[in-house]
Structure formats: structure tokens, C-alpha cells
Length: 187
Image 1 (cartoon, rainbow, N blue to C red):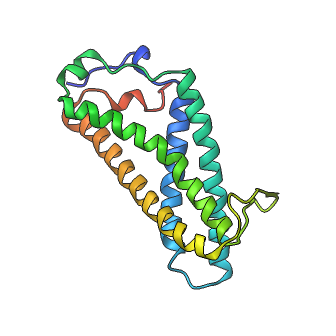
Image 2: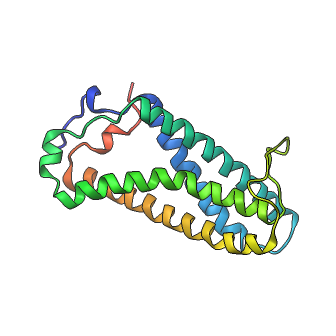
């Protein structure tokens, strides 16, 4: 039987919107990032790289907003029945995964920005607003940074998959209403 979540246990509308927009942006960035790296040098590849950088900066900005929102609007506590039913390792994994996700929301785009700067390709947001270089242009440094962007993005993707799997487990197996806390409110 599915337990109903009350408004006191739901995330705010702002938190829900930030969660889903950031989640969809991360999926899009990962898909485009994976696809574009295998393309031959072409206008399409350049266009996708620019889009990827713009979206990465947007994710960074959204992450700042989300973190500020979270710091000023704490997450609703898990229902007591849920915390009592969760093994201690799941409770620790829940907190560790969320902390790692928040850290990687910043780490991945900042490493990407550093790589782009070191490679000598400035970021001009939406083709209009030039952003300052994160580091000086240095091809050797770019080659050192490049794998870290890829590795951190893969770790982030893995944690997103773990987060989704845990939410689906709670929804379909445990039927404890956990997913309802982050679903858009129904009118």
C-alpha cells in the first residue's frame, strides 16, 4: 500500500523545479558530450561543443541557485516510518550520494571550463557574453585536465543513475511514497 506524503514532507515547488531542470540538463549534457567527442572536425562538432559549454555554465549557475535554495530551505525530513525501515547503510548511502551529487554539480563544469580555457577555446556564453578564462592557455595543462572532466562526468552520470534507481526502488518495491516528495504537485 502506498503511503501518502503530506505537504510537510514534500519539497517546495522551487526545489522540485530546480531538481528536474538540473536533472534533465545533466542528461542532455552527458548525451551530447558523449556524442560530440566522436564527431570529425566540422561545423556541427563546433556548434555542439559551444552548446555543451553554454549548457555547462547554465548548470553551474543552476547549481549555485539550487545550493543557495537548499541552504536557506532545508530538505523535508524523511518520514519516521521510512527512516526506521531503512538499514543504516542505505541511510548513509542516501546522504553520501546527495553530498557527492552536489559536489559534482560544481566540479564537472568547473573542470570543463578549466579545460576549455587551457585548450585556448574561450567560452562566449550564447555567443554574446565572453567569460573570463578559468586558467591560462596551456596545451600541456589542457591534456592533463581533459581526462578529469570525462572521469568526473562519468562519476556524476553513475551517481545520477544510482539516485534514479534508488528512487524507483522506493516507489515500485518499497511503495513508501518517497518519490512523491519530489514529483511536481498535482492540481
